[in-house]
Image (cartoon, rainbow, N blue to C red):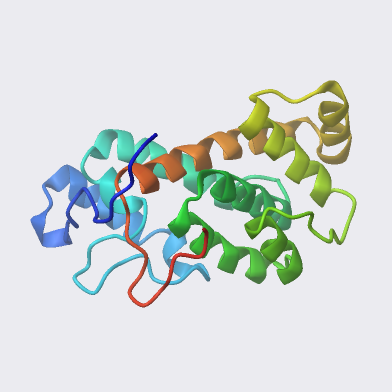
Length: 200
């Protein structure tokens, strides 16, 4: 069993401490489309990046590829925004990724996901779904995370509800936010000041 301890593992990198390659990545993230979302500021008071973004600066070549994929999934995919956020929350809950949950619970609310659904995913209870596609996406996501496959019935229901392009986007989204959750958990990204861990 893994023993968990507190304390971030990679020190924050304020912009004036970065080499040119890392600074280019910093500017891309801090000045990109994420900065204007309802999740809140993506920088600390000293200018360093919060959440999963600070560790990406330590490996800027890989970090840029990671952030570009995330930006494409968030802002360029055809997948409905409510369904996207339900999938992200399901991944965050599976990983107990505190920062990811905090950020995307806010984005899910902004997208119109019912707060009772968000709370049910948080507590691992059956959500009171508000349409017929939401539980399909939730079940599909949970099967990938827990079984590493999806059964034929779930596949058929998801393909029929979303279409081929959106299913590819959904599978990629689940993998991407698994990567982000691993980043957050391994490097112990701290929550914003004054914010308690939302997941137990």
